[in-house]
Image (cartoon, rainbow over the protein chains, first blue to last red):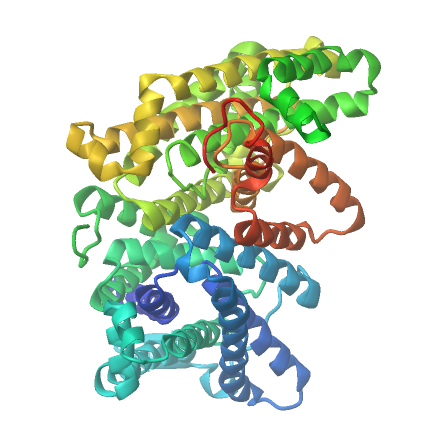
Length: 295
Length: 322
C-alpha cells in the first residue's frame, strides 16, 4: 500500500471521473433546460467514439489525425443532435408529452441508433491508438502515469469553466437560465424558445460527442457502450443530486474513485462499487449528496 | 345492426370472448404441431411477464426500465435450485417467484425512494448491475453461456406436458392479478397513480403501496422467469439485460397500458414479430425502436386502447380510459 500505488489509483479514478463529468454535464444541461431525460445521450457518446475511429482509420498514414478527429467528431455529433432535436423532438411536440412517453421516445432512439451503429461499424471491438504526443507516461511524485489520462484530467475543468462562463456571463447564457426557470414567460416576452432549445441540445450533443472522441483511444469501441455510459451518468446524477452542478462534479469524482479502488478488489465486477456508493447515498440522502429534497 | 355493432357486442360480452380463447388454448396442442405448441407456450410466459410489468406500469404509474431483472432472477433461481441443489422440478418453479419477490423487496425499497425519472433511472441501473454480476460471476452462474444442461425430468421435457402446466399457472396468475387490481389495494394503487398527493393526504403512505406493487410485479415476473428457464432449459444473463426490459415495456405500450388485456396482446404481437422479422434481418432493435417511436407519437393508448375507443360508442359499459 505504498504512496505511489495509492497515488496511481487516485489518478486513475480522477481521470475516469473527469471524463464521466464531461459527458454527464451534457446530459444534465439538456435535462435542466429542456426538461427531457435524453437516454440517447449515451448513443451520441458512442457515435462520437465511432466517428473519431472512422476519421482516424481513414487516414492511417497521418499520425496526428486524432487531433483533427477530436475537433471534427463532436461537430458531427452536434449536427446529429440538431437533427434529432429538430425533426423528432420539436415537430412531434415531445416536450408536451408526459414524462413516461418522453422516456420511451428517447429509449426508442437508443434502440435505433444502436442498430444503425451496428450496421455501419459492425459488432466487433474497434480500437485506435493514443496520439503520439500523449502515448507515453509522465513521471511525478515517484510514479509514472499515462500522459493521455493527465490530458483528460485537465481538459474537463477547462471545458467546465468555459461552460460556466458561457452560462453565467453571456447574453445567451442568461436566456438559457431564464428559460430553465420559466419557459412560458420567455415565450410571452418574444424570445424564440425553440431555437434556444435546439441550441442547448446541440451543446449537450457536442459534449457527448467530445466525450466519445476522447474515450476512443482508451476503450474498446463496441455496441453496448451507449447503455453502459448512460447508466453511469444516471448513477452520477443520483449520487450527486439532480439540480446541482457541483453535485455532478462531486458525484463524478466519487464514482471515479470507487471504480478505481473497486478494480483492485474485483476487476470484472468493479462497476459494483460505485453502485454500492449509490445505494448508500439513496439510504442516507435520497435526493443526492448536494441535491435538494423534492418539493 | 351493422357489422361494427355486431363485433362490439361480441367484444362487449367479455365472458364469451375469454371463454372462447380459453377453449382454443385448451385444445390447441391436440391439433397443432410441436413448433406451435412451443410458440404458444412462450407467448403465454411472456404475456405473464408483460402483465406483471403492467400491474406496476399501467395501474401504479411506475415506469420501470429494469423489469427484466426479475425474469433473470426467476430463471436463475429455478436453474440453480434444479442443478446445484437438486430440488424437485415443480418446487424449483415455485421458488422462483418467491426469491424474485424477496429481491423485489430489496430493489424496490431503494427504488421507491425516488419518483418518475429517477425511479426509471435507478431501475435501469439495478438491471445493469445484476446483468453484469450474472455475466461475470463465472463460477456460480456459468458466465456468458448461462446455465445449461439442466437436469429436467422426462415428464417436463415433453412440450405438451409443459404446455398444460404453463397454461394452468398462467391462467391462475392472470386471475390473481385481476383480483388484486379490483381489490381495495388495487383501487388505492390506481388512485395514487392519478393523484399521489391526494392519496397521501387521505392518510395512505404512497411509498408503501408502491413498494407492495413493485414486489407483486417482481413476484409474477419471477414466476415467468422460472417458467422461461423451464421452456428454454437454460438460464442466460441475457434474460436480465436492458433490451429484454425494453421489449416488455414495448409490449405493454403497443398492446395498451390502460387495458388489462393490453400486455397480452402486445406480448403475442411482439413475440410474433420478433420471430418473423428475425428471419429476414438481425437488426430487430432498429425495427423495435421504430415501432416504439411510432406508437409513442401516434398510438399512446396502444392497440387495445384504439380498439376500445373505436367500439366504445357501442359497448354498454366502456373499458377504462387510455
